[in-house]
Figure 1 (cartoon, one colour):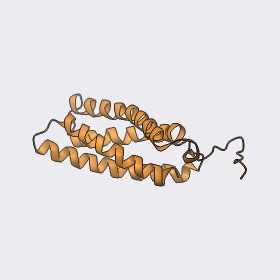
Figure 2 (tube, one colour; figure 1 turned 45 degrees about the horizontal axis):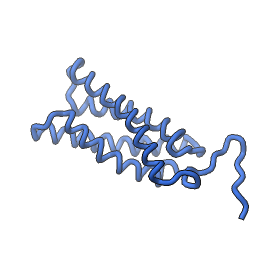
Figure 3 (tube, rainbow, N blue to C red; figure 1 turned 60 degrees about the vertical axis):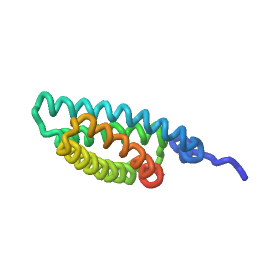
Figure 4 (cartoon, rainbow, N blue to C red; figure 1 turned 90 degrees about the vertical axis):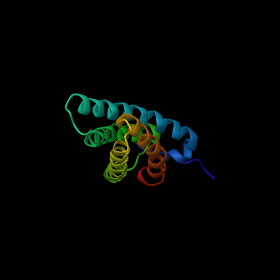
Length: 140
């Protein structure tokens, strides 16, 4: 069997080059940057603009998702496929994650939790879930 040949602008599928654990570490690193953006907007919107925490969580999720898309497309999954396919898939995944996060934050705040602890729990849950979805569907 001959090794695959790739053109100048083509990259091999990341699954051919990078083990899952290494991808997860990269995904977590990209996610950490996106989460910093998310939390920064969350705190600013709640503390400075007096937004409801669940609305602020949604804003942070939308902006953080764009940071995550670019980082994961280029670094984590080295995706050479069409952005016309991967971007909407990523946005759909991020939207579902944002809704789950917003509902989780609203429910936890209703239970008396501080909004930041609620967001931490929602973020950890979504890390594992969205990695699986993005690896198997968005960037395949």
